[in-house]
Amino acid sequence: MISVVLVDDQELARAGLRTILREPYGFDVVGEASDGRAAPAEVARARPDVVVMDIRMPHMDGVEATRALLAADPACRVLVLTTFGEDGVLAASLRAGASGFCLKDAPAEDIQRAVRAVASGDGWLDPAVCGRVLRRYRTDPVTDPDAVRRLGDLTARELDVLKLIGRGLTNAEIARHLVVGEGTIKTHVGRIFTKLAVRDRAAAVVFAFDHGVVRPGEPPGMTGG
Image 1: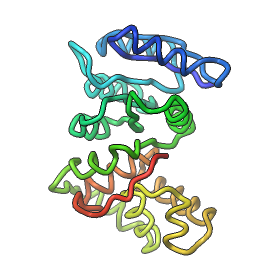
Image 2: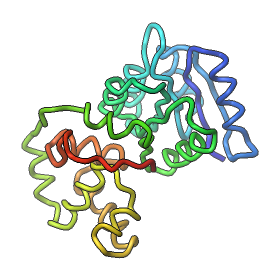
Image 3: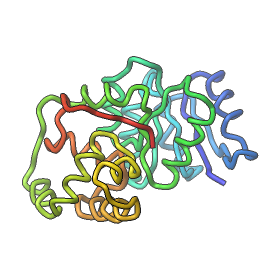
Image 4: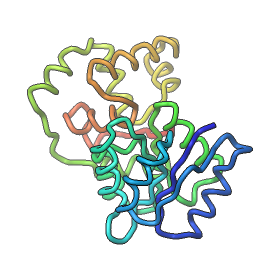
């Protein structure tokens, strides 16, 4: 059972999510907050596996609430829900430490898959908007000496895999692209996460864009998961 805290200022939206994230589907909503400011206390009380966070809220939006949650507990896992066309704030949510994002009007099965992916330690980047979000992410990469050192620790093949992760390809797609087995790619991905000190796929994508491994204008080829 995956425990979830819902953070959304609209009761109707929370009610809809409660319907989607019910026990028969393997979820347990253990807490709710109607304001981003209330999220840290509720999450500290409930200790959920995943926080499902609305991006647009009064007083404190989802980006600031996500930043506050990650500052209090770096292991906290946040899935941001948003509407179509909010590319800039979605990019900001990734910088704040969100493990992924999903459209509010996505099919129920996609939202469930997204929560499961984030709970399991993966990222989730909704394919409907992912390419645009990452192209908006930033135009000028930011580097620092430690990041350069960590990138230097990657083998040539691991760097190839990181570039394809940054373009949004799944492990299966990367395996087909590099003509190797999917198990080999999973091994590379695990080593990349360790060497770069990133916790999941979404963080690896952010790292790749932040440090110039992938440029915003490059073909994204994005998929969810």
